[in-house]
Image 1 (cartoon, rainbow, N blue to C red):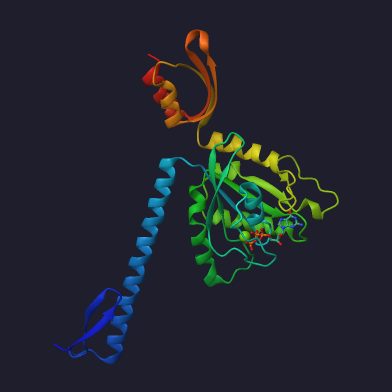
Image 2: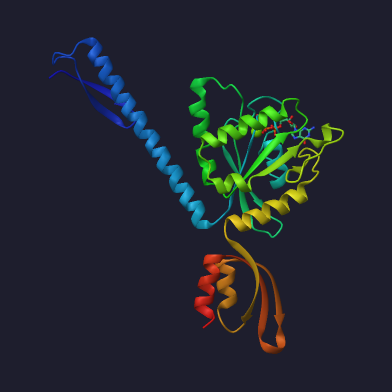
Length: 283
Ligand SMILES: Nc1nc2c(ncn2[C@@H]2O[C@H](COP(=O)(O)OP(=O)(O)OP(=O)(O)O)[C@@H](O)[C@H]2O)c(=O)[nH]1
Ligand SMILES: [Mg+2]
């Protein structure tokens, strides 16, 4: 059999030659098929890596907040304002953000969260790009909260909203996420009067207006969606209760009561962990 030695990244590899009755086109097709298989394998690997990252994030229990919306609406600017992350680069151009990135932030109760910056939506996206665009949003359905950022000063703001919502429907975003989605009306500094209605939050990400209200709303929905509670627990300082809470929950405040060797601990804790705590220490 005629064999050819080929160099690949990892060293030498044999490619079967065309001597077994294969025509030139058949050889080309076979090589293309092999290439397709390699790409498919790489994609599968990538997918399982993303899945692994997702489970790791889950295990660490950092709530994930996906910020999405039409291109140029101010998603990156808003995340920068919420997290203070200077590695973000908002720009006045379509598709300034071309990759999905994650940025750590703190909620008012000091809970760490991850804000995910996404690629902007665009109506009438060419057909062959729709799939790639949707693939970048695959992880959105695994978030704990969605923030929909709208440029309220844009003349097409209403149509943009419609197209964003229709993409979300196609992505099969869970109903609960759609129902709890926060609608942010951004760029209010550019409009003279604006009525945000009952549920939307008016902000100016660029000038830092309305961010406190937004953070409070984010916090309260994240707490509900991730089944977290804020409770005050009286602990006995001679038992390992306090160190357990420091390890398994997020301790906000400790008020020591010296007379009876105890403390009131204000803590944010998942319902599951609270159940565990009660089982361990409240017999
Ligand atoms: N006047 C004003 N401009 C804003 C505000 N928020 C963002 N911008 C500007 O809008 C432009 C787009 O902001 P980005 O944050 O890059 O928007 P994006 O939604 O991330 O855009 P893509 O990544 O392309 O989808 C930038 O020039 C920002 O400075 C705001 O509240 N007021
Ligand atoms: Mg962006």
